[in-house]
Length: 241
Ligand SMILES: NC(=O)c1ccc[n+]([C@@H]2O[C@H](COP(=O)([O-])OP(=O)(O)OC[C@H]3O[C@@H](n4cnc5c(N)ncnc54)[C@H](OP(=O)(O)O)[C@@H]3O)[C@@H](O)[C@H]2O)c1
Image 1 (cartoon, rainbow, N blue to C red):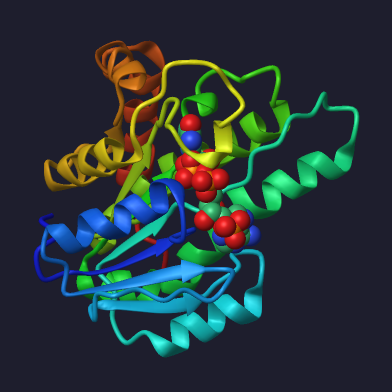
Image 2: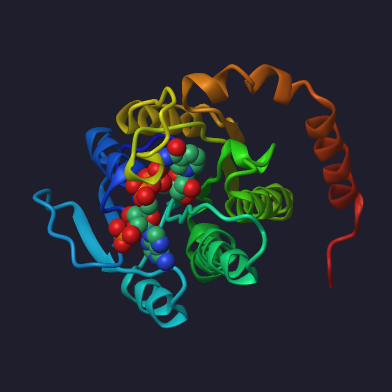
């Protein structure tokens, strides 16, 4: 799927990877980019339509869906990341509310449009979905759940012609991990790699040097093979009446 002429919605579009995804979509000739943000956003490009969109707000998601006539690419990028030690249930709730249920709610709301356009869903997950970061276990759990959701949806929505991609992002130089003194990829190069991979139809996307070093072993590994085998169960099942 090329981006040229397409209608794209990006959540968490005001900074970090989301901001870079908006810029890259415009650079690739997107016809319309809906930029979902919690605070008002002004953008100089007339192809950008700001949307007030907290992904934990059912009312704001519904209002956004009512405002948008058609959509070809939904990018669930909004996310929260905070340290915890699993001692506080509220930390789990906060991470799941945005990173998992926010992603789920956005997909539910925009699925009719994506089905009509035979479009694509791109969930910006994290490498933490594959192996938890013990400094941020609640975040890791929420990303593992979002990845698992992505894996099921890509099978369930294939018959409708909707592609579902997971971005297994490694460390990126944004506010989110500003305090971590580790090598980080620039958000701009990550955004380019995400759109290149969507263009190439890669279902699991490894958009930075660290994640890219794991791509082959993931694609040829036992967990991916099991995902493929499990997918055949759905394809073999008779369609629901
Ligand atoms: N940076 C990394 O190393 C890294 C690695 C793996 C995965 N990721 C994932 O990449 C995505 C983008 O992260 P980033 O690095 O660009 O982080 P960031 O700079 O902290 O940006 C996070 C974005 O999410 C938005 N957001 C937070 N809660 C929201 C809510 N309830 N509703 C709507 N938007 C909300 C923020 O908006 P406000 O400005 O209003 O807070 C902001 O736009 C996240 O899902 C993150 O988990 C990042």
